[in-house]
Length: 447
Image 1 (cartoon, rainbow, N blue to C red):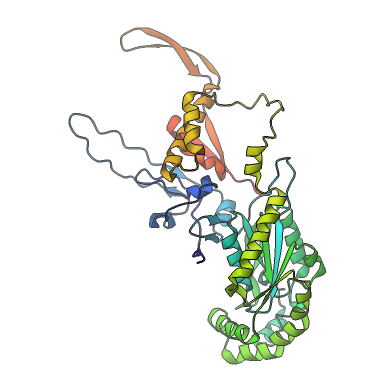
Image 2 (cartoon, rainbow, N blue to C red):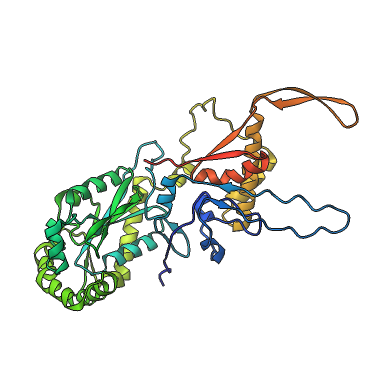
């Protein structure tokens, strides 16, 4: 049975930990190898967006003469506007992992060369189930970074006369001239290069582009779906796999009636007039002939589980060949061997304690909560070792017993931290625990 897909706006990655209960956040983002064995609690989905103030949770009263420990101070964190805009885009969450459909920055192989993503083109008639097929491919694929690009975003902006025709349901949105192929080719090429794009959002009610856009990046896999995906030769040349979704015409008509009436504010008569006069003729003249370019034809669309599984298996093979399984490759063939380590790189000294922590973290059978606990402990040791490399000066202090102690004091007057999203957030809490009232800035690197 296919895993259930939930769509939601993810909480800001800059959210700090709460002082009570479980840590708030998605540890599958911090530790991408970890596949959650248990369902997330409902508190995760209610995590507020940044900036936030961590609520104070009172500690239980202490027993005996021992004084109650001082409550931890409340912290606030903020995040830049560009990342908040990116983070609000929808992501896909299955029962086993989180999938980011806005993509991610460029990926490189073990030799430092940029790896081109695997681009899948999905074509088919209107309401044939292209989006459903794309979502199921993403779900079964199980890779964390996927870009899902729809051709519906690239309709041309209508002038006043065309608006009047569209209001009468007489404008042919299924004709090739209705799409801005020049913009489409440009953005698809940028995504293949791993660069950021601002994809327009088309409003089918007003027949215009909205002022806001959707930020996307390249990814391991780019899925491009639309009714004329195979029509433009430039787009066709960028596709590594071409899939055509073949669904019965009567089923497509029923789906289109339901979609246009419920979601796009159309009436029954207008939808039927548009379908018989433009949609079906355009399918016969422009869409159906492109089936000859398809590598795979999927009858019945998203209901054909066997065909989708075969596609997923082929994609996994291609990703392996292109070097996207970088972690396994580095573990088996450490490319740094035989090369001098830069003087600026310091390694945490290996001690029995460090090896013991690595044993817990690297063990595939380590439970989730223990993995998180020992990871945080190791991160704290890294922070403490880093502070030992700071410049110190001689310092003499007087003890309560009147004895002078000759020690050390950090030469720097102020110290701050810079967290590079997202991975840098795993070290923030340890940094705050070791350095009192430390100020931490955040950087999001966009391409």
